[in-house]
Image 1 (tube, helix red, strand yellow):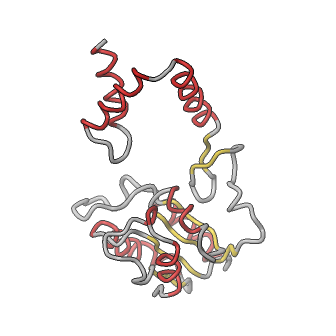
Image 2 (image 1 turned 90 degrees about the vertical axis):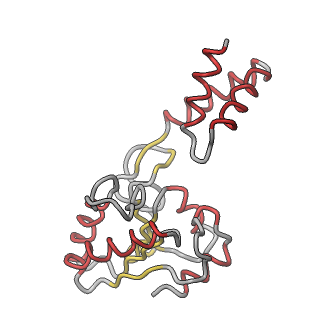
Length: 201
């Protein structure tokens, strides 16, 4: 029995923000639940993974058919503005604002001490996209929308340097100080995010 608990604990440890004690608590919680609940959870996990796809344009993880997500394929959205975010969940935060542009998911932040800037993120794909859209003049503004943390601000600076040679006349802005230092976009309240969008610079 302990082997099963240990295996389940290790799986829960892979969840973001979950430590050893909480992971073990989850594992024991599963032991106390009725079989129907555990079966439903297992089926839901399998289903969400089976229907998950990555948008071919913005790299957002979404539930639906392969190809472009509903945001990128929406002709009513302003395709000339691209907000670059750390992760897919951050896009949901923008749904509570009046932002009507499109997105690009970087897939992580660039750590301050990392020597290879292009390693571990979708930065090269962003550079390629900007180079193409800047050339055909379909892009007017890149909004760097990262958390106000040391790694977030370092990522902002690094991307500005990487994008400058290919952006041409495209404006590169960052979220203003409507957000408190250390705020993750995923948890930002709508009013603060709205303010930071309006104060971008």
